[in-house]
Image (tube, rainbow, N blue to C red):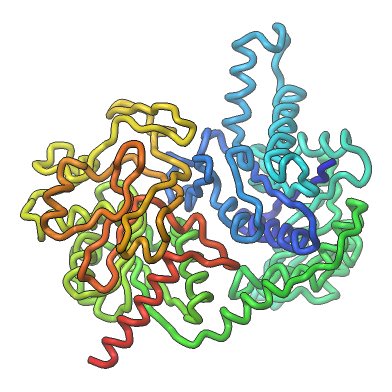
Length: 549
């Protein structure tokens, strides 16, 4: 039977519950256990797909096409289990499901209430999510509950997991609570009071944490740990210090050295082999002992909100590990390029334009792409970055001066990128949309396998086929592809069913690729990713050429 670890957060949000939970999962997996993870989000949105990056950060996409919380990206980076739709759900999805049942009459006319109907539904969703991995043979499911203890939003989730822990019986569930221990500079002290109050709130609703993860900007001295233990009624060895680290990949070792995995195994009454962290030690060594350094200009419009590019920045770090390089990413505001020109790009070894939506900043991104193409700088365009590369090429090489996407100019003379109205999803069902369709749930999402043309840059990276995840609404317009190809562009991969362009490249350029999918979602620190590794190697070559010039 699957056992559960419930991870809650207190005091403030954004403490790093996801990374802490994923690090524990990595520890348990290194001990030979079959581990999966779930994220429960307390907002009403049915998914984060239409939420602003300023509100939500990155939207992660699973293989089966779910738009989920960015924490699922951390889960896939830390453990081998792949996340699915069932691994992330929101309050909105729970209420939607319950209301659908009520409309159908499945509650037989009963009054539908938060307890038991909403809480039972949450428990069913948790159980279903745990069963999705390992053929239903999951040993431990780690469940991260979004929100902050004490807020009203997450109460139904907390009540549901409290009930669930009772129903499952002894040694079936463990509770971990993550809190903030702030350092007050004016007093020169770490303050334990917020943690005490947070645990008190948790205890008031009937949940007693088995371990506290105390976030601070430094290791917490034993005296403060003893104080937290005493006032929170948590054993001293279960008060775990989690201090700021320069790499998220050091956290598993930090937690292991303080005995967190042993403690959780004791609570769950399991006795797996000892943890083998050699893989993580090797990763950290690679991070800290690079032989080279490359500078990448990431040209986007959410440059003050780097969380919106989290998977991408991590993929570049992974590429650095696997090419023995320190990858320094500078976030360049595309709107600033529109005002000040592209001289700032001369300092970089490679240029990257990530995904995004909306017209703002697109002309600055096009300027960056033109600079990369004309100056033989390695270029990687992802999703919108690929579409804008096609637009730039159409304008400046194919003679289509006013080329654009219908997303930015519905009346454009040359819609080289346009809304796709019909496609086949991965289950073989026809999906249809138009301009009036709901924004939520009308993107081409999830993994799709595509053949790659032989003797192309893409084939040298991926081999004969590519299988990556998508999240987009607009596509390269096939009507213009012959003219683009005549001008020298190469479409090196197409979808097998709809014949939609998936990868574009420019032969003769040292390294220029645009991909319609999001490769960053499948990069892991252990394995890296062939596309990003190839990109960084090209940046190193470019750097050496510039030094020799």
